[in-house]
Length: 297
Image 1 (tube, helix red, strand yellow):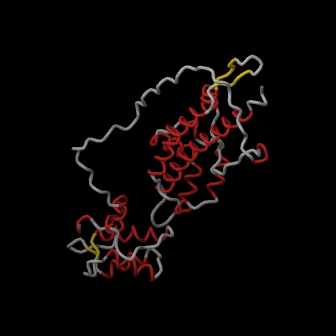
Image 2 (cartoon, rainbow, N blue to C red):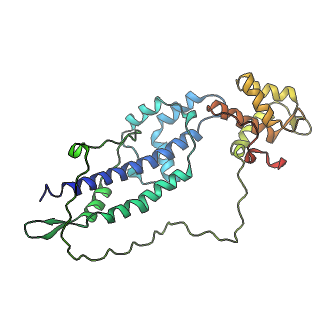
Image 3 (spheres, rainbow, N blue to C red):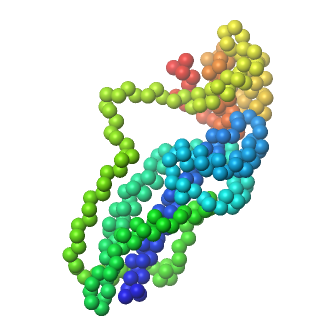
């Protein structure tokens, strides 16, 4: 009987491993996005990165609270996790992508339960053809009791079962079973949007650090019109350490009005573009529509 049930048990183990890795990937995405957001814009990157690694428990608590994540999904070996982070550059991290997180949520909330429903609901004792175990109940118990792996790596490893070939499942005899109970509604599910609600104003990406950019802007003594003349603007941009070619592109995009000066929004846009270049991104030939300063739209 145990040998006959090996294909079913193998499927259960692999689905359980998929659930753990999906939960770990979700946690890592939030952690990476948070670490990226804590890095300074201009200098002190290495010092700030070491401070964040040293204070990983606080980082975990902050991310767990703000993203409402289960504590058990976080890595448990802080030393191993921290050693892996030391090999990375936080400024190269990407911000969180909500569409990809939504796909993970769909996998956990919809796809995995649907896959479980396709598995045989009962195992059978072939000696008397009587059901002896419920697969779905067993899976739920395993998934709830097993913590996720405590590493950054999400490389999947599988056992070489049947020499890599898919096991052919023996079909159990037709035995009437009770229909599955309907799943209770999730109290945290998002409600349908009101079609008459006012749409939120589009977010201006440079605006996320506008206060920080304004503080730098003020140190270069803007004129009575609250603008930096060409000398002040050039000095501020050269202080970023960017090469001449990239500074030329930044100026073309930020000072596109052609008056040779930068107001506070144009300066914020210029600093935003500098950070894009420092992160290894290519600047576009023309300004993206959502990058245009709000006052110029």
